[in-house]
Length: 278
Image 1 (cartoon, one colour):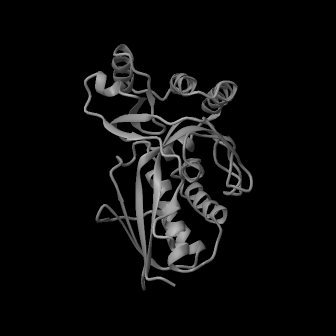
Image 2 (tube, helix red, strand yellow; image 1 turned 60 degrees about the vertical axis):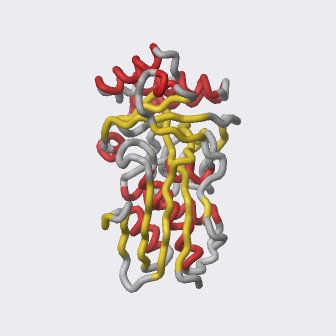
């Protein structure tokens, strides 16, 4: 066993999704589409007598990370760093769950495969109520289309075959748990329409169009989001809302062209990885 191990997991912006419930957390989750981002989460796992979790130097409690460590029978010091906004639709909790699984597997020499680790992280996040599909998408990388819910042994993941510059501007947080635990029938129907649209024409422009339509039909847009999306569109951009956060993302230079001091990254083709070879 090594003393510690490091993993990188891309951030993930969801454009549209469904809510697919099941008593088995490895079967539950969501279908949908999103972008894996070169801005992500770096996780270090060190063996320790007691488990502690820090994010950007602050001690936190994160149920998904605790569940991952329990599944791997590991006590560890988990340290994560990210430049991504928290609670704003970037999959930070999923990134921490998957990063912990990858790095702990290496640090504790558990010998599990990639899909086994993704299953553990996905199930942990579903049980924690912090996400439904981010882990699967972050494991895939690129522009994943999740066509069936659940972990790797149950889902089916395709992708839009493209790369692009991505800009984002966060206005604040939204509660994932409040939305996915509420009435989701209309949201899921909107998500199914968006998925069908992009499957018929798997291009970046169709992806963004379907994302905007989903945000409207699912009634998730706040007045501020509506205003910023309108300004970016007026400037010739192709914007939408990040699920689930009060965040606008766009391809190319749309936010910059509209006068916003946007964060800039790219679609990240690889999924989450152990950085030091584990």
